[in-house]
Image 1 (cartoon, rainbow, N blue to C red):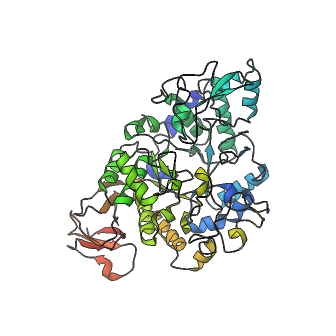
Image 2: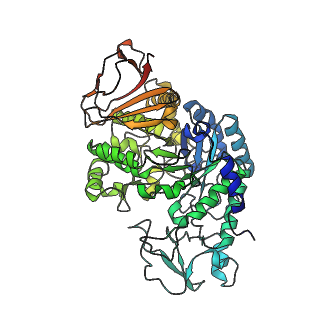
Image 3: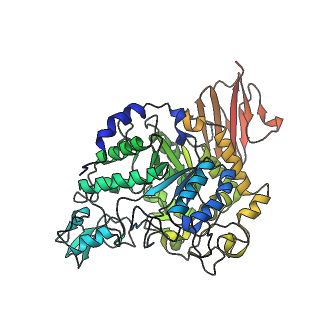
Length: 562
């Protein structure tokens, strides 16, 4: 029996992958687009999105400029947690199609040069998974030790909940098993026992299977919880980072350019452990720390915490990369802010209790949170110009809203709004998996792809242009960067340099115009405004003062005369 994740292959991977020049790493310059299959496009009229539906919309994603699709879980599942309660790691949820549909989707995506990243949910399974059902029925079952059990209720049975205010415990008694099982998440999601070598061997087979099916990488769900020892202190658990190294080695050995995008909401001093001391951990990691301070800056115009968070997360391996985002499929997590900071963000963006979740976050989409086009554009311009890889949520490109009548995180998981036809063009069914937004300023009759594609001034067309601008400036993902002092506390200025190119991006977080002063050797350089062809926006030698409109943003190419 294999006792690890193909650890014997670690050395060849180190020789052939870890020293690749960063400019050859595809994830450094990509735009990643997050899709919930069930809410994207229904092709067969059953009210649920499916793979054939995504296939129909691949031309749209290619037009938008998307390089990689991150798919939410699509394996068989009772769907009690948006598919994150997996009941079969090797199958396709019949709601979304079958193996043939998946294969066709992979072919059509590859044909358009679009890579596919899938969610890998290995911290827990569904309670309905055959492994757990056999484990609870028979103490002598080979699957009993695939999960974490305790004959007596542990003293910390109600500690360490991921969903406080909704979740009541982390150890639940199962009558058939005659024991308590551990679950960091909901009680219908029992945790797998990562200390068991047979579980690790099975994970290696799951990873190998989907790589063989053509996927280009995995969004690794809940990374800290995968690595933790459940019998250590749940408030400060011990972690086995060797498992992360094993996963990286297996992924790279099986498919050299496949990547791991990790979900790990950790403090800056912990980053190195997740990226790996020898760049042998995750390729990309979501920068939750910077994200939370970004929203504090959007709420208050106080930029110093954001600047500090970017500096504190600067030191990562050269071949690694941060994944930056504004909103995702979960709540906006504000747990790393101080209570005072968190309350200021609540006051600005989630003042009603119905908008808040888990005593730490906000369950809204970005467009209704900000409430105005100017600040929305500024926020997305910032996203595409931060040092890392941008990740956007389906529907963000048209400014979709949320449905706060839905429970918990479902508020931001409503069907994609394609047109003003029935059910927003998502489905011809009488009812859909979640209701479409059909009232208020974000109703599909006003906010949809078809209408915005026809309007040259729409948010959709603006987003397509800013994506192209991001791709025309690869030094954002590859080059060195520094935060500039421009004499205004409301303006964030970042300069990138790399491959003989230089770029300065400016963002005014204030609703009022601000004048900034660029400091540096710009006397010999020409600054070209990349957002306009107006000759008046070309700043010749010695011109250093710039006025930026309220919630304004500017991208400048520095042309050296030498």
